[in-house]
Image (tube, rainbow, N blue to C red; front, side, top):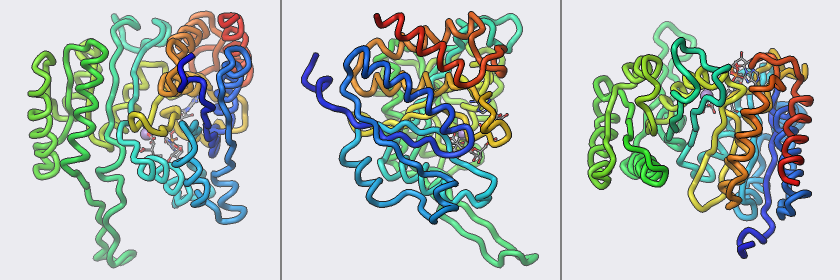
Length: 360
Ligand code: NAD
Ligand code: IPM
Ligand code: MN
């Protein structure tokens, strides 16, 4: 074991709202198996941040927890945030953006793989036709909250959200996408923007894509307007290997792309700052209508734990977990959303049992 893999790693666990705690509980069981059976030195720190806590005592994401995560932790496992009892979503913004912006997690990496033909929604396509990774900018864009409302509630009301794009921010996510393409042997990088309409902000994207791309002559680069890219994704997903895009378009494209994966219950993500504490979460939200019923699919969380283990320096575990998830789908040991009859916990039981078997 290398010195770094022997060092105790601290992982903050935030279940959050709705189905978040239910799916995260299954992710924690996976980490426990690695700790117990492979001796990984993982220390979990559980936080109860979310709507319940906020409604109880007004706490969203306290400074001390932010400090612990920033200075002591190696990773965060997050469920989801969002609760109908907090319609303004102020706690969700504090926690989710507190992590993404506060830790400067500029790469929102969302792998799009279809693990089984059983999940493929397109006719005349197989699972092998879908395998690309979206690099979503995660610290800027329309998400920064700049703007405001004026004359609210009057006929002259004005509402503004600014789309903030910096040279530094655009360049680092585009570079990360090209680096990833190079490392993984991809041939092509796509960039999606809307520079025909957003001519100031997205002209920057177009220019930086050309400039940074020119440093990688071995990689083909293709720019599409985001609306056209959505069409081409459905028409021929095999064209895509790496897609880099802004915060908002990355959000939308990856829900669309979750359709290739079997739905929201199968889509994993990492909010990554290379070499630093990073956060892993399923792409889906808190799904209030199915919360508390033991029907949420925990497999996106299991796959996100796999991404976390790679980030922590443990090689091979991500592939092991994704192999188990594939087998769960193909053998029908899954929740209803992906054609099974198991509950959240029973799906977790099956994955944990398989993992224990394969590690022994
Ligand atoms: P959602 O992802 O919660 O749900 C969309 C659809 O997918 C629903 O039909 C839901 O039932 C289904 N779904 C989601 N996860 C599932 C799972 N694990 N298993 C089975 N089905 C699943 O999106 P939404 O309904 O638009 O949002 C609900 C709340 O979650 C909102 O408050 C939203 O802001 C929040 N949200 C939070 C995050 C996050 O914390 N990262 C991400 C997305 C949405
Ligand atoms: C996601 C979510 C969030 C986003 C929401 C909850 C603000 O949809 O993680 O994809 O838009 O980033
Ligand atoms: Mn989203």
